[in-house]
Length: 244
Image 1 (spheres, rainbow, N blue to C red):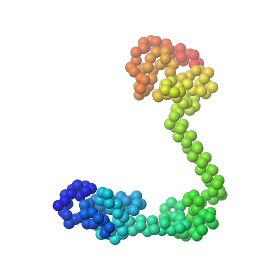
Image 2 (cartoon, one colour):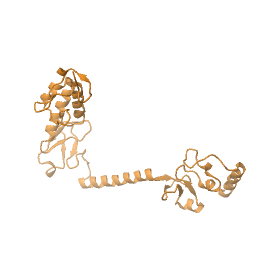
Image 3 (cartoon, rainbow, N blue to C red):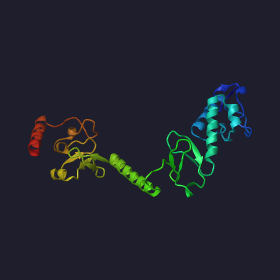
Image 4 (cartoon, rainbow, N blue to C red):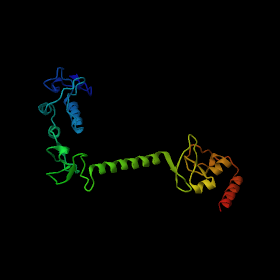
């Protein structure tokens, strides 16, 4: 027996086979590991290569048939090889309709045609963008719309990551520098001089008047109450009366 260079399991020496006729090293990967190696490469639509460390020789179809016992995997690799060969043809394009999987050569390519009609499903594919054809829009208009959508998505992502909704008026607010006290810039909140905690969204007025127990318990700034309950109730009463 000898250890496999991948799984390190002791395996009978007879179970090791040369991956390709071009390999210069002794066989050192067991069939099971080699099969898994090929399965991974086929799944990634990559070119199957020898699994031995430092080798990298490309496996021909007959090599895969000799090394792998899984007939379904061999068929999958055969399809993968065929697709790569077809894809290398000049002006070959895949149909962009989801689930079609067909493709064809379009003589002249984008220099002569804007789109092609799939001979299998009849869908139109834009040759310039390789998407389902944008009927009613030129390629330039399609690109302009895509750029606008990207800008809108970037703005939405920024607002989602860097802003919080004001708990009083729901306007988006950005934290000022490193401080967690946020001041809403909306006219309504500016008149009231409303400030809130950027972490837990609590009103900062009682926090500044008493202590950090007015933060939400889940907030990093919260700690157990230290204030006098009587003072707290009087603050709440005065706040209610001032608000009204």
